[in-house]
Length: 520
Image (cartoon, rainbow, N blue to C red):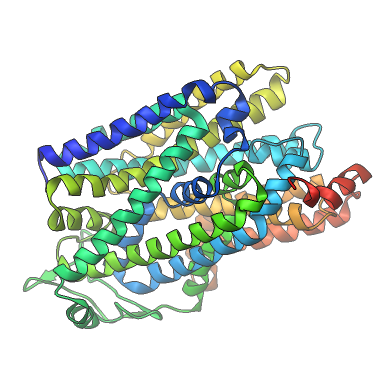
């Protein structure tokens, strides 16, 4: 461990100072209106849009959760998940981004996702806005917790300090610049953080290959582990009664490889469905300067994503060759990127690279905090209780909400044995199933009704919760990732309920028929 390493700490401190300064730089502009605070005035260029969307999406999961899975059980689970995410990202940029940018402007200049749904269906009673805001608050609070776990593990592993203390300090830093700077601060630091994450992944990938003795030696070592490099089988570490992998003669023990069947492959690919309902990504589409810049953003985003996901999976695999007995549980294996950074880089550069982990956690958790704040302040407080609320009042409520989510996220992150991968997968499923089907139908099917929209959101969210608790434990096909049944059932319910209820008004039809003419 790097204990009391001055240069590592100095590099990370430098990074923290920069991101906090960004928040203060944007304070005046962000506080000029709620649209500036929550959406940046719809003035983001293609680079800022692309890197902000991807950095806020991936979080510390990319640098810790995904490599940890690859390190512990091999390529299959991490690889299929990465492929699903890559496909989902492309389809989201291709089929949702431009349409949502245009329709959100037509829908009374919606500045949040609940705003968009409510305005799209002319929801005078704010039913959709309330349901969407509650779902965002619930699942983003869990999501924020995963980022705080990342912060705690990072500082605890690097400096040997108390996990809980470090987790809380990291969470407070994220809170400060989100609280002060709003959306523009978040997006600008996302640009910095996305670049740093990319640099960190590529650097450690190249260095770890060299440390392992080259590609041939790495493949030869990993091929001896049953199922480790296969796409259709999964390695099975032999565990003792305490749940730690057994080490014998200085080497980790593995049993026979288990089949990585069609159910688990489908579960990995199903991760891609989540993108259609991910508020922190969709809000970036709404804030882009002009829809004509979406294509350029898509190209930038896909290059960033493919390289980053590939490097993250490979780092986990190569880490097993470099550090075969370092991590005995999947939760501890999520530190492989940190330890490799310590081994491969001089202290100051190590500090800069591991700041990429904190960067990832910061960019995502700040988005989750901001989205939660906007959901409560703009959609519940102003939408339901005080329709004549001023911008200043809305932002006060938003910041009170940030404090509440911060406290809740810290509370669920106190256990340092929490798996970042598992926390993220649950929140991802909840948001994807709740909003994904409705987002697609709201943009492509004019017959979608308010009642169908409400029923679909509730069905998606509840299915994820109930499937994970009661159905998945039955095994077999029931063990499929809960996002898939939640997404499918939500889609079906929206269509069926929309068909059974009265058609939308002519005004809604007219908006739908002409919304693609906006932003020209």
